[in-house]
Length: 151
Image 1 (tube, rainbow, N blue to C red):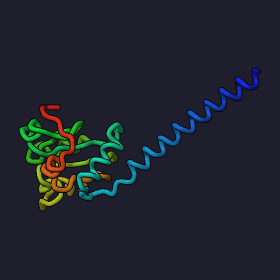
Image 2 (image 1 turned 60 degrees about the horizontal axis):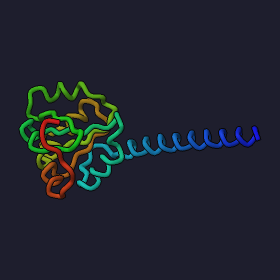
Image 3 (image 1 turned 60 degrees about the vertical axis):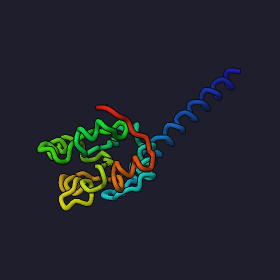
Image 4 (image 1 turned 180 degrees about the horizontal axis):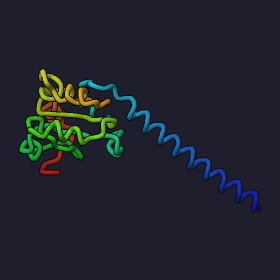
């Protein structure tokens, strides 16, 4: 009887450990699959968010003005105004190893503008930065979720 109980406990422990290893492998794989300095279509950006939103190594950056941010933004995004004099300083405070998903109003400030945010982040040593193709306007037009207000 004691042997069966012991076998049952060992089996449960092995299953739990196996699931944790699989989950951690899957999580790392999702974070590593990001090809840096690319513009992602909304659907792909949404999938990236769904897979990684709980990870402390994943950050969504809204680089529009604070006024635009209050009128609507992606859940859990951090607002750092691209046109602010503090933009570069605030970026330098962030981890260079995390994955960053950027968006502006229409894609101009993230990757189209000659001195865009993705270029600056690459110069500062950020390793994994992607942007939402055509920005918040495309996100909203495609009816992906947004939140209003300051947070």
